Image (cartoon, rainbow, N blue to C red):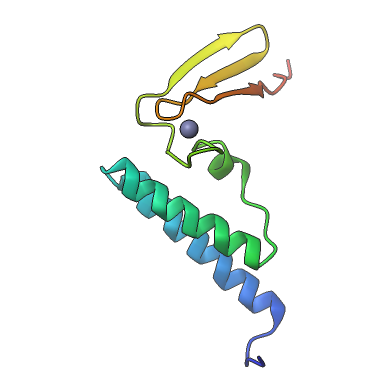
Length: 101
Ligand SMILES: [Zn+2]
């Protein structure tokens, strides 16, 4: 399908919508609904061939899409941040960035 927008414009619009979805997900009180927003956001990113920003990617569980703010356990061990999903129990290890001195 042809559209009046170029690829660059479309991506810019998609990026905006992704942030909008992320905002909706971050204020949603119902975790199941927030997870829906995240799924839509991921699909959008996939279709537009966009990589989600780190701060978005690290805010929810990769497996069940639940935002980490619902009952997630965080622990720090050595240089790793251990994230224990409060919904599906998935464990994710995120290396902490080196702090420059
Ligand atoms: Zn999970």
